[in-house]
Image (cartoon, rainbow, N blue to C red; front, top):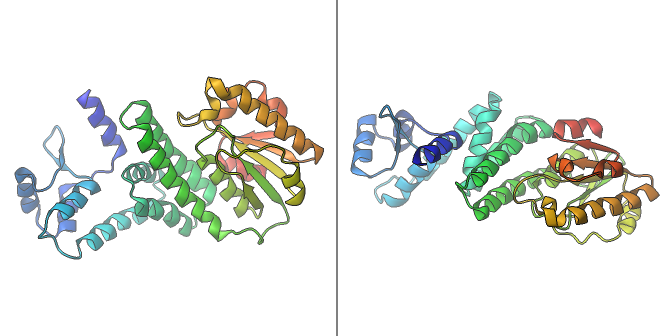
Length: 305
C-alpha cells in the first residue's frame, strides 16, 4: 500500500533534484545533503538513494528556518515560475497538467495562475489549454480521489481554484465586444462543479459570443424570458462524469433528463440550437433526442461554433 501511494505521488508531483534545490537555497549540494540527513529539510529518497524534493519541501524549509534569507520566497517563486514558463514555451502539456494538479491540491493559486494565464499569454489557444492542460490536470485530481489518496473536500478545493483562475480569462473578452451572437451556458440544478461550463463560456467568448452563464445550483425554471430578452442564439449544457457531479447519480438522472427536455422545448420555440458537452451525455438515456449536437473536447466545441 505504501508503495502504491508513493508511486501515485511520484506521478502526480513534479520533483526537484538536489542541484535544483541547492540553487534555490544558495548552498552547495553537500550542504543540502547534510541538511536532509539532519532533518532540516524533508525529501523523498528513491530506491537508488537519490534525493527528490517538492516545492512544498522547500517552502516548509523557509517557513521553519529563521535563518533563511529575506528574499528567499522571491527566489523560490522566480525559480518555480521560470520552470513553468520553460514548459509552456516547449508546449510540454503533460508536465503542465501534472504541475496544475499538484499546485491546485496544495492550494497554490499563484502557480495555477502562472500555468493557465502564462499559457494564454504565450498565445496558446484556449481550447488547447483546456484539452491539453486543464482537463488532464483535473483528471489527475479525480484519479487521486477515486483511489482515496485525497478527500472530497480536497478535490472540491482544487477544482474551485482551477475554475476561479479559468474564469478570469473571460475578462479578456467581456460581453459587448462581440460577433452579434449570444449564448446561454447552463449548469444543472443538481450539479455542483461548473468548470466545464466555465471553459465552454471562455471558448464561446473567444469566438465573439456574448455569453450568459447560470452557474451552479441555478433554479432554471422557464428560460423563455431570458432567451427572448438576451436574444440567445445557442444554449449549451455541460455535464462531466466525475464523482463530484451530482447530476449523474442514480437519484438525480431522471431529474437531469427532465431539465434537458424542458430547456430543449423552450429553445425550439425560438428556433435555437442546443449543444451538449462533456462525457456525462453517455449517462443520460435518450438525451440525444433532445439536443442538436454534442462535443467531448473544447477543440470540437470551437469547430461547432
